[in-house]
Image (cartoon, rainbow, N blue to C red):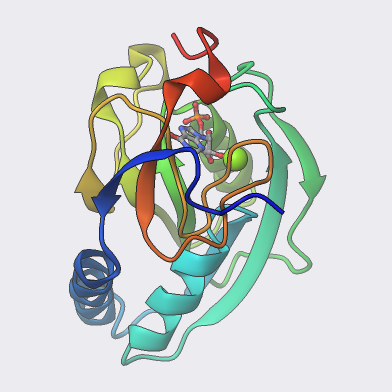
Length: 187
Ligand code: IMP
Ligand code: MG
């Protein structure tokens, strides 16, 4: 089996940096949702590591659920097409939703999901993302990010849940993938 770090050009965010920012975000969310009915909705699979750390740092009660949508195949460029693979199990009218995502790129995935879930009339709906790549945002999506841990440059990153072709999710830190791995596909 190939070494996990073989195609990692450099570490962008260390475990310590990630943990410290996740703790800060959890403290803010705990304050903001003290009198609310918080339902964390993790977007699979990329958000799972972030979700696991974030929820364990909250000092308030929270329920969790997951959705799965298709975005990228093994390419690094979003198709813009979003398909629901797994939906929520319960109605959400009585909940304050916080969508938990690994990375916000064009914004296509989250703007689609936010619209879909808003139609189900939750009490409120906000977005918490670990990473934000503002340079890649498609302004048409007009998306507000309520909580983010890091703004990062336009580079393809993996680890801490984020993948390239389903690999590298188990890296404990976040690294920049060597561009030779995906060639010119990432515009
Ligand atoms: P968007 O719909 O264009 O905002 O894309 C969001 C999704 O693209 C994320 O949930 C990731 O699965 C994927 N993605 C975008 N940029 C990266 C990256 O740098 N590394 C890994 N996945 C990424
Ligand atoms: Mg992905």
